[in-house]
Amino acid sequence: MRTRLRGGLTSPPHMSNPLARSFQNAFSGIYYVLRTQRNARIHLVITTAVGLLGTWLGLGISQWVPLVLAAGLVWTAEIVNTAVETVVDLSSPQERSLAGTAKDVSAGAVLLSAAAAALVGILILGPPLLARLLS
Image (cartoon, rainbow, N blue to C red; front, side, top):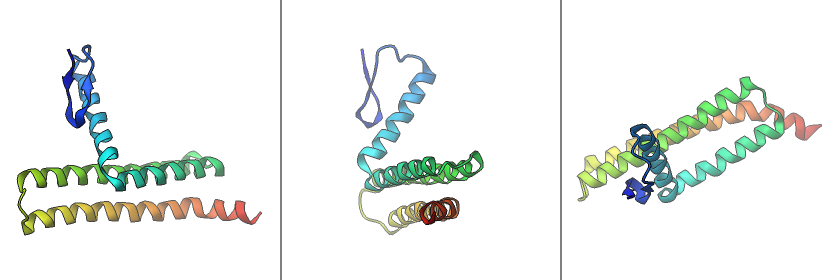
């Protein structure tokens, strides 16, 4: 018997292991964010482009670490933002000033993390990209 999980996914019958179910729930949440949030899909395109560009430029491990951390920060902020918006909508279906403030603050966190990640990307990818293009 399959059980219905969050995000509309179902677990296979053998998913009685709590650890496996925890991972399934987490992946279901990520899938929900990608399926419902336009900005998450934009983040996915940018993350993929940065990965491909970094590979093409032959970045070393010391350059990959901050890029991966910056991307992880953006993804985490986007996922938490979606959770905050969902909880606010659930708890306050009518329009309220504080509900809007909570959503705005959460979206601001995504914006700040994305701006920081863009700066990290420019600082790390910019010099080798310029060198490659000018040579």
